[in-house]
Length: 400
Image 1 (tube, one colour):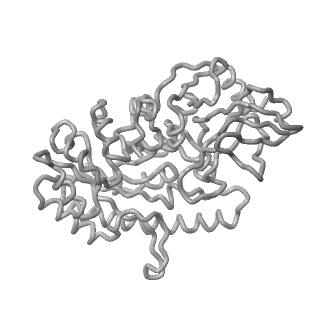
Image 2 (cartoon, helix red, strand yellow):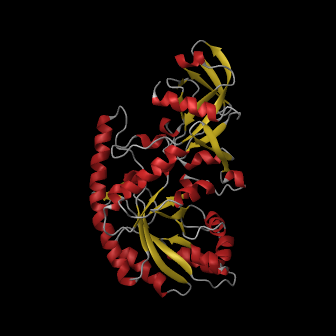
Image 3 (cartoon, helix red, strand yellow):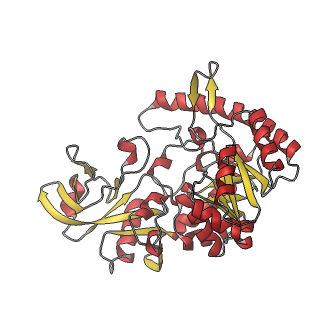
């Protein structure tokens, strides 16, 4: 029996009492992935990206491990909810226009002490001030650096379009604006190098593309290492008591951690290891989060149909954004249909051994997005469900 076949047997036994659709997290794999992130971080603390987890119980589990510290959140409403739930260090990594949320933040000293918000434009500070409604608490500010690689005088740009602040001069200018402005405190810098951390460099069957990606990432790391160090020096000249410099992502943990200027690493997807993280040469994680759909039809030899399963991920549409049938091994989509909203045909010889009601296990493409589809994650230990915990959705929250 292969390792994957053994996993399928365990998952089927553990969830035999549960009807599919069902989502699980294999705790042994989850914990092993967490330990690997810490190993690659080389002693620097890892801040957990909540958008990649979207389950309070699992956020608490990973933060209980020595080496993990703090949450990187994705909306202000989520940040306030987490802070009220006992999370003491929440970095909101995306600018917000949530006026009601800022009114709450600036009126509550405990929330204001627990939550740091990201800014890259003075207009965002204006919005916060206009939202205060009498709230006078100091707002903790983190500046975001644009990490994109710019070539040929800026005519070619590689990297996500996030912050407009690319140079040490621009970052220092906004740092001075924050430092001079009453009601704000500059406490951190963040820089997410998505073109390095979020792009696999070992794409199966694409050797030339993989080599091009590795060359790009090597050049991007070299340029960003120097520029980030210069940015930190420039901002510390304005705010010498800066608390943290956050960088990285699951795909670049060890590289970012090697930079002296960086004090903490951000990561989250590496806990679940969805399919988009199979294409990295520098690490191998264990698939920890999966979902199962039930067989509901047997339309012919070498074919079964499961209920639903069409859970595409965000980003540029393409095959890599789709879930993949994982267990039993050897199933594939019908190229004329793909994964469907209400049914998904699957082809391959393993289909002939599947009965009505059997589970087919899938891996999704992007980590936390699975939790937007399921209310509950069943936590598997060995061949049993050790606990069933709510996702954000299961607690009544869909923050985006």
